[in-house]
Amino acid sequence: MMFLAGCATRPSSSVLSPVHLDKAASEQVTILTATNRNREATAGGYGSTWADNLTYEQYEFSVPPDRKGTTITYPSAKPNPERQFLVIGRKQLHKDAFVQTAARSARFDGSIGIFVHGYNYSYQEALFRTAQIAADANFPGTPILFSWPSAAAVAGYVADRDATLYSRSELADLVRSLAASKSPKRIILFGHSMGGFLVMEAARQLKLQHRDDILQKLVVILAAPDIDVDVFRSQLKDIGKMTTPITLLVSKDDRALTASSLIAGERARVGRLDIDDPVIEEAALKERLRVIDITSVQGSDGLGHDRYASLAKFGAQLATFENSTRSGAGDVGAFVFDTAGAVVTSPFRIAGSVIHSPR
Image 1 (cartoon, helix red, strand yellow):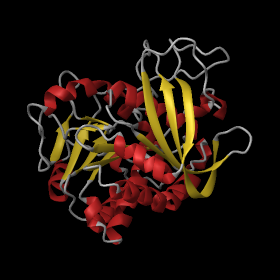
Image 2 (cartoon, helix red, strand yellow; image 1 turned 120 degrees about the vertical axis):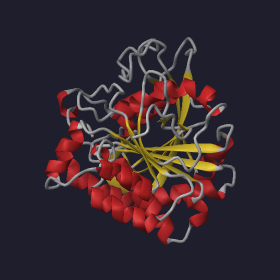
Image 3 (spheres, helix red, strand yellow; image 1 turned 135 degrees about the horizontal axis):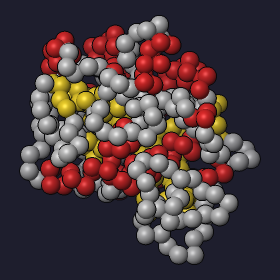
Image 4 (spheres, one colour; image 1 turned 135 degrees about the vertical axis):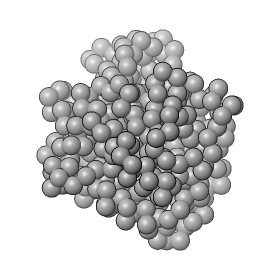
């Protein structure tokens, strides 16, 4: 969620226009995108109207070397590659070319990562956030952004929930297409906030379509999921046991989810689960979930809702971890993330969990 977004200037679709740099950027990342937003006829961006089909694109980003935390500095009239994230290349792809590009760029262990943004995000905000995460995580493959038609407005909460339900077939179709290429061994679905609800709905749809072959490849990670607890329980019942346990990144002091709970008639949200509650620990074990408290991670939105973006900076530690004590698929329960020396995950480099202390 971005409840405070209205207090700051938000980027227009002009930031999607490629800029020419006289000097090559020291760091670059490539992002693939799939969206069911409508294409804006004049600005070259994507709006909040629901489109009938997915549109596929590829972006090349120049990444600023001295970026501060997870804050994104957007392009200005005078682009500054030292401080700003800049689009330096952009092209539209046909579906087959998109799938082939994603398959060729699968990281060394055969993983493809898909990021699904949350409520109140414009296309360009979600795209630049994906670039920041990919850069900080030093992800060796090409991450994919799935951007659903959020209204990108604080007052659009109900409209956004409807848009996620509308988008579940498109996300499931994207996953099916990638799985059919046979290259990926794992497809990481990372959903933030309301995007977590969409991820669960897409997984549920694949299950109802009897696509267990695809579900076996899925690694589902939900950061601050804005999902009603009882709805989540129903989704889990429909999806059934997954090869890799679902990971929940939660924090009981997430103020954005507190607001979401109030909007929903004070119904509890999954992203605010208290892992110190014995009931939660028992439920995690019963449902085969990894429930990880990330309260110790510093956020930037003042609400404790965007901590997931900060996790990427711990990605460099994963190489050592993966070569030593990789967690297995059976590691379930409630855990604490310790920023002093532990890595849980980043959106596109999943390694199970390194645990400071089991609860």
